[in-house]
Image 1 (cartoon, rainbow, N blue to C red):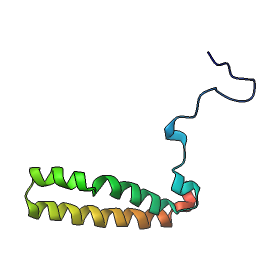
Image 2 (cartoon, rainbow, N blue to C red):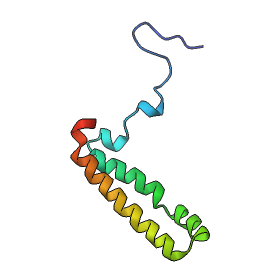
Image 3 (cartoon, rainbow, N blue to C red):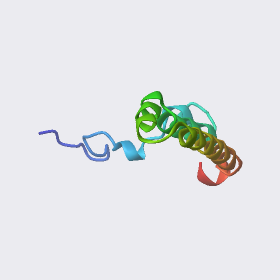
Length: 86
């Protein structure tokens, strides 16, 4: 069992929720980081393959367009309001 020394904090690493994303820590703007993280999960190839089996191609195209436009808007908004969050 590890024991924390006085003043050094807990003997375990901080939970992931409290860590800053690496790109944000390296100087990328908040909107860029959020847009990238949202696009990677929403518009990934495995996600599109799975959705293609569930919905029609026309609806899938509409989903891609709406998500892309929404992600871009979120990026611009958070870049403009970055001074409030960071």
